[in-house]
Length: 413
Image (cartoon, rainbow, N blue to C red; front, side, top):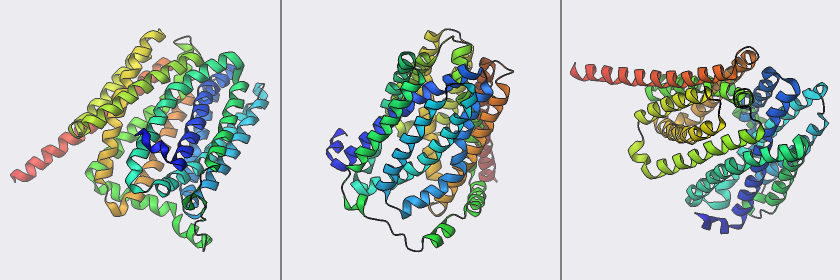
């Protein structure tokens, strides 16, 4: 697998992503704690997560079209430079009066990222060819696991040593380093301009987002497996929205910890994620079933419920690797079933509809957590999230059982 790093252009692309992601993880850990300590409000903290989600609903489809039209390498370089500059605005936030700057930065960072990643996905096959994509994507996935181990703990240590502003500077530098590495990519695929003829017409014809969303929903409703996954993940992502907002508050309220402990927790789950990925890579053909999905999310919900009622960080750190395993096994199964069950001619529209709708539902979970976080304990709300995971698995089981029963009656008739 590592032999692919001998490919010069891919090596620079991979290293750029690795560096910037480590910086992102470091800030991801520190910033919510900074907001909560500054305001003492779960509402103020949750609002940042909601603002970060909004661009995915509106900017994502546009950004994908730009990746088809413009030079991909230049899009990534410009995106990194913009993110490196914008993040420095956080240095100005030295009191609650400047809290609004954090929200502006979160929004701009999210918008810019929506342009970076489609450009990267577009460029990767051009650099390597389709025959090496499996290796490239495997190594790219491994880099995410590596950063989930390094970045959070690094963020916690930097927060203690240098405060939020030291982390901001380091994160900004990581973007500039990434831009420099990507600038070193040299190939006709990276440097050649994409066609920009009839750009306005292309944008208008490709960005009929509402019709694509409706058409995708229509097809989803006609495929049993797809609609089952759609319902399941809609329920799960509402619970995930709650956890995304309140996990930081839980660490502080229930565990008496801070950014360092949060870093340990994400790293612990990252270890489980790596194990889960290795399990599915080796035994995926045997484990790929609806039972794996139901069992995976059921166990995840049970583990989250247990974790929510703990007060010792050591016990939480023992539970989280198992959460990582169960989540990865369930999500890999969901993704595979989804890909196999969607018709080729509609897969793009279905995927777009799926992602947009899931984003909306996750935002609803975030909004619920944000509005409730100042009135209910974080442990109570995370317990609710765990129960939601279990409920989603039960709905999936009920639909599968009903479908099998219905099919049996039809065959007997």
